Image 1 (cartoon, rainbow, N blue to C red):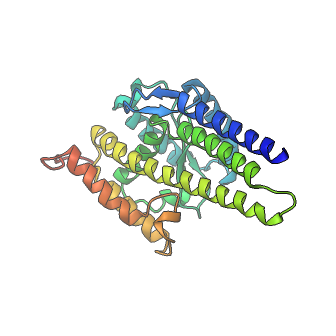
Image 2 (image 1 turned 180 degrees about the horizontal axis):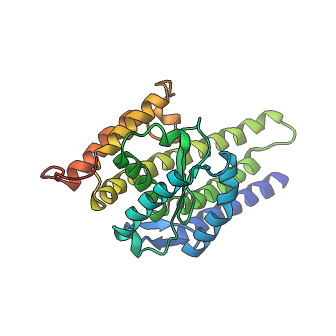
Length: 269
C-alpha cells in the first residue's frame, strides 16, 4: 500500500507540473512566438530591479569610472530608442561592473543589463560593444528569463516526482535514480540556454544594424570571447553558452539573411 501511495503522489506532482507549464502561455509581441511563461512583464521588471544590487555586488559593485559608465548607458539607450525595443514596456538600464578580471555580460529580467570591466577592456570598437549590449537586450525582449524560470519549475516538479517514485528507504541505492533525474533536468535546461543564446545573437544582428552599427562586429566579439576562454572549453553539449567558434557561423548566417544584398556601407564598425 505504501508503494501505491508513493506512486500516486509522484504522478499527481508530475501531472500538476506539466499542466501548469503547458497551460501558462503568452504571445511575445516582439518576436511573435508563443511562449510558456508564468509571470507578467511587470513581475519581470520588479524581479530584475530587486535582484540588480545583489548581482552587481557579486562583481565588486559598479565601476567608479563615471565617464565610461555614462558612455555605456548612452550606447545602450541608443540601441533601445532606435529600434522596436522602444515600443516594449521594459525599463532598460545599463551598468558597468567593477570586476576587471571576469569577462562577462548578462541581463536580468525586465531590462537591467550588466557588462564587466573585464569584458569592456577586451573590446576594440564601439560596434563590438553595441553587439554585446544588443545581444543582452535580445534576451530581455525575447523573455528568455521568464521562459527559463517556467522550465525550471517544470523540471523541478518532474525531478521531485521521479525522486518520490524511485526512492526506497530500505534500499539506499535507489537514490541514484533521483540523482540521474536531476542530471537530466539540468542538461535539458542547459540545452534551452543554448537556444536562447543563438536567438539573442540573431536579434542582435537586427538591432545593431537598425541602430547604425555593423553587425559583423559581433563576429569579432566571438573571437575575443574564444581567446579569453583560452580555447580550453569542454564539449559544447555541456556548455550553457554555445561555443563562440560555433556561434560565428550562426551569426554570419543571420547577417546573410538580414542583408541578402550585402551589409550596407557606412555602418559603425
